[in-house]
Length: 416
Image (cartoon, rainbow, N blue to C red):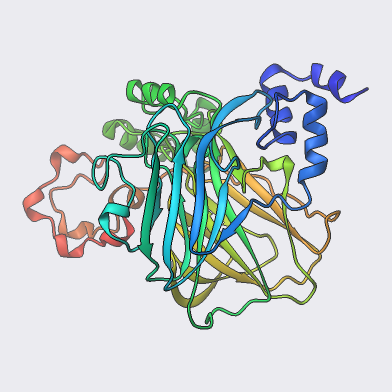
């Protein structure tokens, strides 16, 4: 049975998903399924994006057709790529970045986390009027810092439709973070739908994309494991708060496709390394909505930088980061291949890639973790409940909370 014939035996939503997994990327023309398959062969080796450096850089904002899910959509791109070109700059340099807007609507570029004059910050309506259609805006600023950052549109939903890129500023002096090799790993989320339509649906019903709501079978499972009273009490608490225990994301994989360096999971972005190398991975969360839990099974992650700032190294198995955040980690691979696994916090989907010594070696892909219900500490932080005599702990009824007796000093806001 051929590829096209096999797809006919898959349900339409599933077929659309499978096609997207294989295609995944910016296309020069409207693709056929055969074209998508050939695109896979051409892109699975590296999956890299263009890299620009120097003190004068030209960027062009435009539209390009993409196919991440089996259907063609128009994306907002910079210099024709998703992600946008990586800008590798040098601390202390005086930068001139000319940005031309070829869209039919205003646009902008915001330099996320960069210290610069407010007029150059790139936020329409606050620091400047935006870049009008057909206009070229010249950003000029001195680089006063180093580290892993990123840049993106601050106009409408353009960031959500592909307008984001990595911004790497090399330190003027020797980098204190030692590594033999490095890769940038930019995570994002893509939707085939009109972002404004998704926003409209969320305004009507905030959990419309949450398909992990509590079910009757789960209720009976709870009874079997913890008893009738506990199962009822658990649901009563959330019902009284009129909240969902699985309210973990506004948008789920039902609306989003999760990308790693502009590739869907089966397109399999790949970063190569040589045996014995110490590898620096610059993780950037360029998504519009998604918190990712990132791990590399069988490989420890030593976090050395957060949001561009060097930190005291700490070794972890996994880390979570939200939109706009960056983490640099150093790894020391011992095996020939590892899967870089970034699952959405609501466990509805994932982005993935491969770290390997050769292009033809892969590693097992883990299953998504089970969905975890929110706990009260997720909703309210670590509170000293003994300081709240007016609180009904059995039902957590907010109406019965004696606010005057709340010990604000006992509340750990850092964990809220």
